[in-house]
Amino acid sequence: MIRILFVCHGNICRSPMAEFIMKDLVEKAGLEGEFQIASAATSMEEYGNPIYPPARRKLQEHGISSEGHRARRMERRDYQDYDYLIGMEHYNIRNMLRIVGGDPEGKISRLLDFTDAPGDIDDPWYTDDFDTAYREILRGCRGFLEYLRKNRQ
Image 1: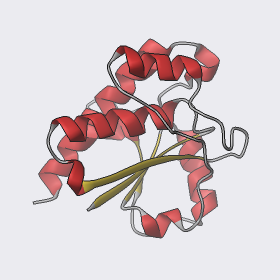
Image 2: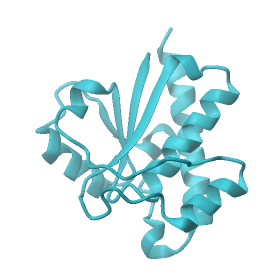
Image 3: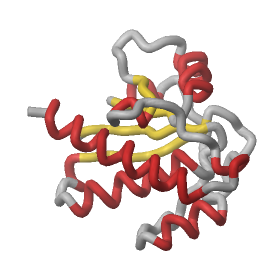
């Protein structure tokens, strides 16, 4: 079982979008039994809140449900519980490293690091650009899934 935790600042936009996009890709590939996929925040600001409505609507436009999501904060034990901890931007990575106390096993990466154009995914909470966020997260998830397929054999 491959265990993945997607992480952003509040766990109401980018990381739950990544969680549900990745679940959709895995399901369409017939691999859902091989994955455990979740998401979390580096802050407590949105703790317990559902996915942000514009993010939910963007997923729905693509036939992806985010039903039942509630924001939670990443915890130190997540480092042991997950094989991959994937942040959306360098600020997330910095905060993730602070929360877990380092990355001795090399589990922490940015999502777009699995693409041919590594970089940060801007927070659509501030940019109000959920189209770009969706496209970048989808590209990152596809690249990450391809990476996992190549490296699990």
